[in-house]
Image: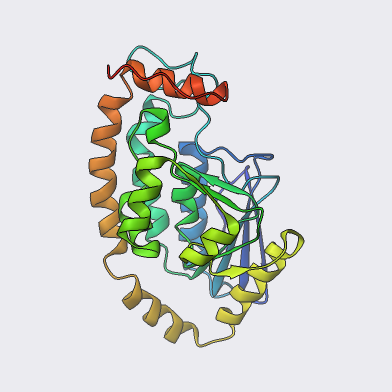
Amino acid sequence: MNLPDTPELGIEISDFVATVEIQRPPHNFFDFHLIRQIADTFDALDESPDCRSILLCSQGKSFCAGANFGDGSQVLADGLVEGSLNRVGVDHLYVEAVRVFSAKKPVVGAIQGAAIGGGLGLAMVPDFRVGCPESRFAANFTRLGFHPGFGLTATLPRVIGPQKANLMFLTSRRIKGDQAHDWGLIDVMTTLDKVRETAWDLAREIAVNSPLGVASTRATLRHGLAEAVKSATDRELAEQTWLRKTEDFKEGVAATHERRLPDFKRR
């Protein structure tokens, strides 16, 4: 199998399970380039008979703490952020996200720490999430003066229900591991030191079944999901584009960096 060039991903296949490890520790902040690497890797694994399921995991403390906005000082005049969600990245990031959601092989996510903002969006790619009490989930966009993205307006209600998703979106509340398990955001709970092992075991449990049967069943269960993510990201990006230019967004980013409540001015 010819794998793409993925300098920030570790890829290993064993017993028909492909482990795809994000290697941007400690917090694994994402950008356009990282999501494209994941999309390219998933595309390649779709074509590999040696892979029947995928384990998506990360090095370090966080699964993915979202996009790195820093202290807000790098927010440009048009509201974009140099170096993380840059002029190329913002316009095309969600195209790559749709590609990730279009992958054909089942995915198990090992969520050992925080999945925040767009990192929560990435955590919604797997069919199943394995977590622990130390897992954390937040759709903290409104605390940033922003709008949810990465298809979360389509994917999060699908998993935990519209009302709980609304609660997460409108409060920007951080959900701890035990509550996430109660809500169905975590499918399997274990201890921190066992998250990856438990997730691999689940991926292996899927991989020992008929690959044609699994692929056919999964295609039915996820029918329309990638299309829903595409529709959601189109609207999300439109809303994010104008909000990104506001003073409130800059204040939200700065306040988050400074660990204080933002002082929004509605402008």
